[in-house]
Image 1 (cartoon, rainbow over the protein chains, first blue to last red):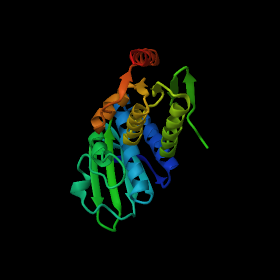
Image 2 (cartoon, each protein chain N blue to C red):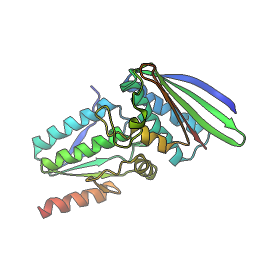
Image 3 (cartoon, helix red, strand yellow):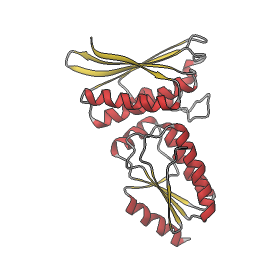
Length: 134
Length: 120
């Protein structure tokens, strides 16, 4: 797997969530992603960036455009040093929320992308990697 | 402070969301709308999201809350102009916006609102 370009975007305040969405849109456009997949990716970014800001107490979004044979994709990793997710199984249940939301953030984001990987431990922060291929 | 404008057309309120909303802006809109509904005794609210290229669970929840809130204040809400890619994504996300009336465009939305106001 080849990384074409990469960078890091801070995710600390509400405006950063908007910027993260706009960056994801631009990256998806750069790889020629079709509109429906682009919309799904940007929506997933919105959910995950909000989680990073709200529950993780802020963090970053690492971004990459990757190439794997004929495929091109956008890979994003949301990292925070927050409290982590104590019960991952519960957090990955549709409709469950620890905040005031609808509980669709994590599970919804997972459905919207091609690859989804989550690492977390109590007190050790959370890392969510997603990838959408063109 | 940044605000989304709310236009009045007779007994109806019209909101066109044209910016990439951050969460606070969405919450401000909710507050402003409930105040305006009460101020002018609005019979209906039309929300045009044709310029929105993304609706996530936060915005979806705000739309649902505006709809529920206006209903208990005796006003109908119609959501119009959702882009196909946005609709597909919302359903996949798990948000089907139960209880929210929708129409394809502003014209059909206004027709729907007028018909409902007349039938009351």
